[in-house]
Each structure stands twice: as C-alpha cells, then as structure tokens.
Amino acid sequence: MKRHHITAIILLLAAAAICVYAGGLFLSLREPDVIKPGEGVTEVRKLSDYFAPLKGTRGDTDIYVLKGEGDGGRVLVLGGTHANEPSGYLAAVVLVEKAKVTAGELFVIPRANNSAFTHNDSQEGAPLYLHLTNPAGEERAFRYGSRATNVIDQWPDPDVYEHASSGQQLSGSETRNLNRGYPGRADGNLTEQMCYAITEMIKKEDIGLTFDLHEASPEYPVIHATVAHEKAMDIAAIGSFELDMLGIAMALEPSPVNLRGLTHRELGDYTDTYPLLMETANASQGRLRGATNEKLALDGKDKFYVAAEKLGMLYVPYDENGHSIEERVGRHLQGILSYTTAYSDFSGNVVTIENVPGYEEVMASTVGNFLN
Image 1 (tube, helix red, strand yellow):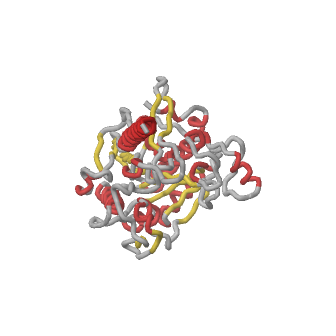
Image 2 (cartoon, rainbow, N blue to C red):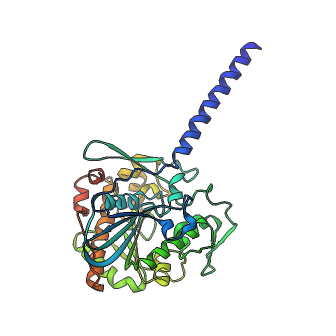
Image 3 (cartoon, rainbow, N blue to C red):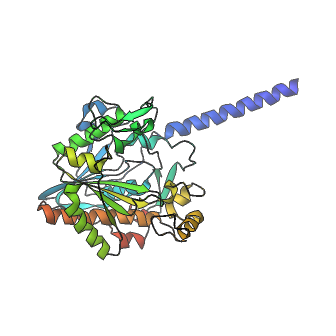
C-alpha cells in the first residue's frame, strides 16, 4: 500500500506541475507582442480613443500614426483581422517599424482583433508563435492566434449569428469573426464594438483608402486576389495593372452585395473610404495540409498541396517551393504601395509612403531583415 501511495503522490505532483506550466503558458498568451515603432511613427493611439467602452478590454488595440510633413490623403491598414493569417499581421508590423510618410497620413492597426491573438483555434494543432530574426541577430516572436475573438472575452455563441444591419444569418461562431461584424454596433457584443470603433475611426479621421490584409487556403477560390467595393474598382484596377506589370498576378474580385459584414462591403456602404481586401496563399490555413507547425506557416512547403495542385484541386500554382512568408508579406506590401499610388492619382489626395520594401526586395531577403 505504501508503494501505491508514493506513486499516487508522484502522479499528483506531476499533474500539478503540468497544470502550473500550462496555466502560465495560457496567461502569457495575453501579453502583446513587442512591436518596435520606427522613426516614421509620429503618434500611438488606442482604438478606445474612438469608442471609449473598449478601454480596459482585450478588444482595445494600438493604432500607429505616421504623419508626413506635406498635406495629403489618409490611408488605413488593418492587419490581424484574423490572427491566424500571419502575413497581414507581419506586413503591418513592417510598416510600423520601417515606413516613413512624406505626404499625407498612414494609420496602421497590426492587431485589429487583439482578443484573437490571445488563443488558438481548438483542434487545429497550430503553433503559438512564429519566430523571425532581425538584422542584429535578435529573435523576434509573433503570436499565431485564432480567426475569432477569444471565448473568454465573448461568450456564449448563439446558435445562429444574425448580422445586425442586414439580417444575414450565419453559423453562431461567426459572431466572433471581426470580418463579419461591420459596420458594428455600439450596444453589440465585443466583436461588434470593435467593428463599430474601426468604422467610427474611419469616419472621424476621413480615411480615404482602407486595406484589410488576409490569407486564405490554396483551395479557396478567392486567392492571390484583391476584393474591392464597386466604388473602389477604378483604384483597384489601376493598382492591379501595376502589380501585373511587376510580375505579381493579382486577380480582381468585386465585393458581393449579398455577403454582409465584411470590410470590403460594409465600409464601402457606410463610410466614404475606398475599401480593399487582399488575400495571399497560406498552406497552414487549408484542410489539405500536412503537419501544422511553425515551419509550414513560414516556408509554406507542403507535399500534400504539391500533389493537390497536380490534381487540379487548387486555385493558385503550388510547387515544391511553396508560398513562403516572404512571398506573402511581399505581396501585401507591394499591394499597399501600388494601390496607394493609384488612390493618390485617382483622388488627388496624395499619400507618399517611403522606406517600405517591395515584393522583389522582400523575396531577395527575409521578413526578419525588415524588423527593428
């Protein structure tokens, strides 16, 4: 009996140690990543500056303002709408750490859904962090989060989610999807309040052009594409033509009028901004993938997707080189530069962004080399 008691005590101590470790890890995910603003950042605001009830919640997030000396238009970049789509988040971080604006104003929100960065999607086996090395040899860690607001911050999900302004009905879990809640509600749930705050910011700051940066699985039809509201189509067409001239294939998709709650639809309908949503190809998003780990999220190499491409199952070319984080971040950054130039020419509200690496420059290096 004594031996059994000792075994039981050892097992209890081991279980307690595991619980302490897991609890510490769980709590650590609530700590935001370190972002090191470059000299181009002139001010850091909070989303709660535009909707006070968000203050003190995990729906609040940093807004980095880069103001040029010359007058001009205003551009907003949303990264981290879905925190498990890292190229959009990292492209926004590169802007914060490296960009300089000489005319007009650039607003960047790297973690649009801050709550979504505090957890992972269950049963997906996704990594907790992605690690990149900066030019000084320092390792920088960035969260790989979830598509949706953390259930700790917003619960329970309804059986059916009804989009407030249109009545569109979706699966209940979509109530925590930031890109299904626009234009938001002041008296809604946390996700709807985040949408409301972003919409209010766009109105109050007179944002002329808004980017929403995303990733999608290679088998998703809208991939390597820009989705544009009908009023933004001229800007999108001009920018897409420039991208094509640079050798970057970018399909142009019209925003569906019957799919509600998304930035490219609601921000175009409810504000004066020209909204664009960009999608890059990320194997770690898809259902055909192999092991879901940090390596896949960074290098995009997956033999199952290579096989799927040969079977004609994908909407994007896929070979042994995969679609790396460099390619995906580079596409987003080049898109921002090209579409902003198109907006400046089209509207006359000039926004000039400098010191941002384009597609070829990122592809020839690493994303980490463009971090502080």
